[in-house]
Image (cartoon, rainbow, N blue to C red; front, top):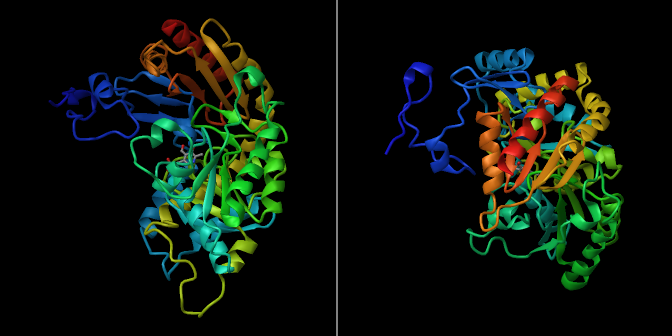
Length: 444
Ligand SMILES: Cc1ncc(COP(=O)(O)O)c(C=O)c1O
């Protein structure tokens, strides 16, 4: 049963035991897309092929791979303090990183709760939302509203508010009391838009309909300012403002899931800044450590934090947390990463690069390309699916891109997603367009 590979090239000789996440396991084990090392904009396969990273790992290595200052910070931290619980104890870097993140967040989002991933960050935000209403005497507010085609990680809360059918359908009835806004995407109205589409702000008004239906039982609405994982869907112009206004009118908390958009992807520390809309909580992960050590969390408003700060002094105010919340290695990596973003002006770089990037991506228009969407340093390219084999064309494009064109892309169904590290140059963009175009041509 086991797939045997030569150990002379330094890769495992048995691929069987690892049940790979969100992967076509059998296809991988037949033809492994194996990577052995990485530096800056490139991965290297065990046989030495140099592969352009068009996805920043999985939306996370924003500062490029294996940056020396981050590596050194992690190594130093591992030798100095490997672990201390942040339940009733602490270490200085957790506090330092929380302050740095709060500084980057919009004013009034002043408190940071650490988790280990985007999914845990989402769960934390949803629990804090319901608990916040509870501690201020509004225990009736228990419902959570997500959005169709939204992605909020893989835990039960996240897939419940999420709206991607294939990540929900095997898992039973999910959380009770959840409803969804409509997706903001409409190809007829928005095809080939650069940045935020003009059409679609009115779709936020659907929240009024849900308020009519559910009355004063809604705790929070969670949306991605730019829905990334399902294929890059930027918020239509004016949509988030409208959502904010309706939430305010009805005492509903607004949560932005910025696991992808946080830390520069749209040219600002957070998309909240790009859109001038301040939510009550921001979920973050990925870019906080540039993908080097797992970390996630949620930034919450002072009003929310303060609502919990009562009761006996010796009692924990929120019965929630994880063994590795604020892990020393993640905090060291996070601090070094934020230094790099600042010192190299990487968020600004994304902002300056956006016009060139979007122009270049639109060159991928061609036969079988149904739509291309760009915003910040991201791009979603919809390929015409093969009849009766949804996802096959996307999968094949990924395989051809990796093995033949030496570029790592992400395919979500038949949508190719590009979201490179922020360190890419103009010539990397050219290289990416050429390689991706050849991969698309090959599957058409
Ligand atoms: C918007 C969003 N939320 C949550 C998650 C889940 O993050 P993680 O995979 O770190 O749990 C992701 C992952 O891509 C995401 O894109």
